[in-house]
Amino acid sequence: MVALVVVGGTVGYWLLGLTPIDALYQTVTTVTTVGFRELGEFDTRLKIFTIVLIVVGVGTVLYTLSLGVQMLVEGQLREILGRRRMDKQIAELDGHVVLCGWGRVGRAVAADLKREGRAVVVVDSDPLRVTGVTLPLVVGDATQDETLRAAGIERAHALVAALADDADNLFVTLSGRSLKPSLFIVARARQDESIAKLTRAGADRVVNPQELGAARMASFVVRPHVAEFVDVVMHERSNEFRMQEVEIPAQSPLDGVALSDADLRLHTGALVLALRDADGAFVTNPDPATVLRAHHIVIAVGTEQDLGRLVDLINPTELE
Image 1 (cartoon, rainbow, N blue to C red):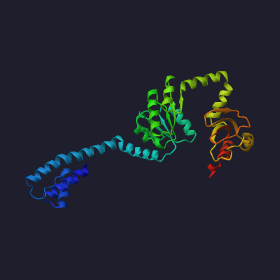
Image 2: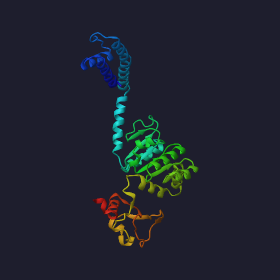
Image 3: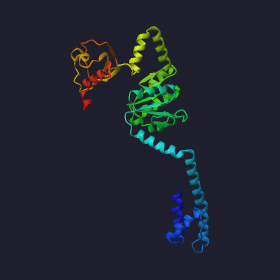
Image 4: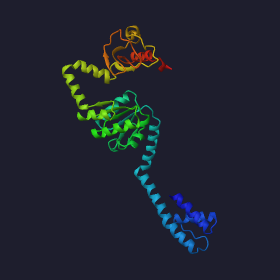
């Protein structure tokens, strides 16, 4: 706006008879209220033009200066620069997870994903709630498409809808599925009747934290050692054993090989607990005669080194 005032004033004075340099000089001295002197005798046209320039130009300059002071005093300049850095950081992400909701569930999800080395972009509408968050962040309404786009939803691998309200999670699921049809979506449900709706809306998995928590508490009562072992294997890094899933690609050397011939336990040290076929059916404790096929999911347990060898054996192209 200031630039337009300066250009407009210079052109106006020039058209009214001043030289270009005099026109620029007169414009600057007028809009900055310096008021040295008028260049020559001003006729009625020049006086009227100067009056208009004073009203428009001085107001624009003072408004701009007041905004600049406000930004510096309130820290808005730092916030704007930080937002630009954050936007640049998000723009460079690919295959990340968009996490909508920074409540207790969202924070727990983010902590687990971070431990697994996954990049996470947090989306929440409350600036106070996300104060101090060190992850890439978008402050806005997650139910709006532009907010999800700002979080890089088109480049994301997965979307976690962990908002407190089931209706909001439904909108987020619909938006995520429409913006990227191949997106893997996990949605939170507080009410049982919301599970079917979220599934129809496009969620690949729907989780009720209350039911999972209740089942986990009951397991500690009925099978405490089993429940604790599963907890340690799945969630704690202090234990040497972990569980992992590995998909068999089309070009894998194990495609068409029986489990007994592959002898994964001998070659990798990992123990195969289950297989999941392309239709989604699980085969637990699979028979040694079971033939491995492309797109089978191998679920195994072992040390980090064992599981690394399993991945290399199933998909050696990942080494390239």
